[in-house]
Image (cartoon, rainbow, N blue to C red; front, side, top):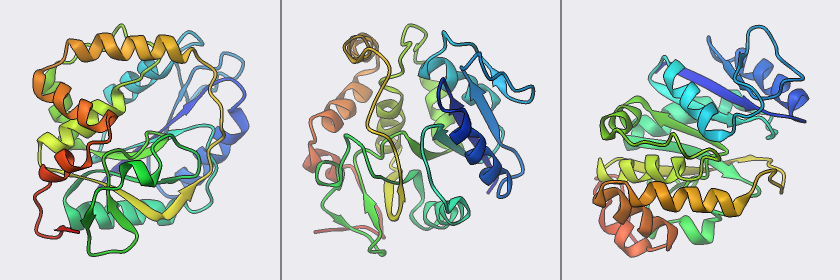
Length: 241
């Protein structure tokens, strides 16, 4: 399985991004940094300019993606076992036929109590979840291909709220598992540097334009409707609790 990692860099994250890039390059053949910090325009990075926020970075990454498994890493995280995480991503994606796999994040809105579905896997560290968080996550090529087939217009969604919900919903609709690995915990700071109210408004606008089936699943995820989401999971290696 060919993994293509993308690291998103922005102002004040340069040192962390460089450290992540060096670590991932020791594991993967190809690593791409999508950079929106004009003070650090490295020649081999993809420099998209400081007016670019998450959607511009994520769209650029998807357009450059060349592999079987898309890895997205936010540049403000810290972790010391990328080799183990990547090895486990391949192991568990293959075992569970998952569409999205992610580690645990030490600071996230999508905490275990809210997202773990009442389903039992064959591994204690693996939980089927409604949401993985998009700080560090792996997405399979077939889910990305399904996203493109939907022809969803996110051009007016500058701050990027909704990308996670769309990809997750496509997984549920495609009968692919969304899994979180609690053996890996990523360090992530407790702050944002953008307007959350505007990001929420952008999400509302794009959601209203989506197909009805996507709107339904997104509503289940945002309202933590575990029973509805559980009913969509059909897999021989998953059992109800």
